[in-house]
Length: 406
Image (tube, rainbow, N blue to C red):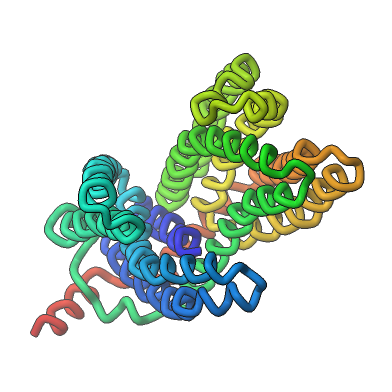
């Protein structure tokens, strides 16, 4: 939810940066912190009362107790997301990506070392793993905050300002639209696993599906990179007032990602079940993965286009439109077809996955049509209107900071 809500900053900061209203990026960042902190507080009871909630839903008491224990630790992770996601969007809008990459690499190294030390060497078990996870999330956050506030973004960070508390409602609306858009996509894949769990021979099916989804997740990292690139470039070009630049960015990122997807499509069709032995020694599971490989390859091909178009939507501020597209294509088409094919026609996991793929295909085609039919000159005017509507003269913001520091 918070990742989706933070993506509103990609629209706001990207367009403001393109329009050279650099000082507005810092105000947008602070407004997003306020909105996400309030959201995290609203979600807090779910983490505090996880155990009784799960027991009320019929979950095994032992599992519910362990889940409740883990959820207490996750409170620290939830609040870390506020800083992590917003600072990433703020820096990406300015194409300051290397600092994010360096901090992420450092965090992974720390996480591996701490996980080994706390779980294997010191025998802290689950507590050690969770403590290591929290530190791994907060270490890059501290680095990002220091970079932003201590001179790494001189043009875009002018210090803390009371202006961050003004005009919050437009940010709230865009953040909620962004959150709904992303949640609807993430929950879609979760439902695929949920539906598979009720099938015959579910253990093998879930094992095979988990391997396929892991491989798909690896490939998605490439696509998510193109999503971020498309979002930044489109928002920057719209803010700059260049509809041609926006269209060129869309064409370039989409075709590049699609070409990579085609190569991976052929590769995974060729490898089929061989990849399964990276994860398992079971021949039965490997055969199930080989049987699912054509669907995995199709998913990878679709994922080379769909996230890029979602990035275009974020850059242009279409989050609410895409949320409705996701509801229609995923939940009114994909899931019902998957249930019918999997349960009624006895196609089991393949039938469920085919239905989900059809939903993704419908969403992708719809986004292609929307993007193709869009009047990008009009989008430039809308971007300028959005920036001007929330524009705060730099002299006024500077005076406000001086008053706050007095």
